[in-house]
Length: 81
Image (tube, rainbow, N blue to C red; front, side, top):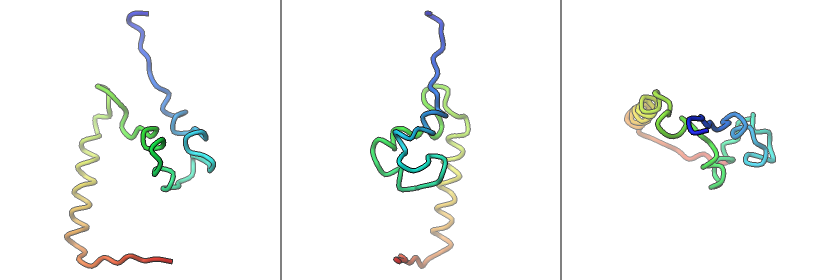
């Protein structure tokens, strides 16, 4: 048991109705990420020393894309229904 590897079941965590319900967790509902419980339950890139090697690259691309959008488009409007 000393050298056993323990790994979290990320698929079940992301597919849990207890965390993401009452709607189907396989459907996109951005509002489900607002609660504190949901924010800590979504593992984007994993945890610990074995995180995704693409995490820093992905975050850099997201930041660069946002900067380019903000530079390109100078007028922003809030649309309400």
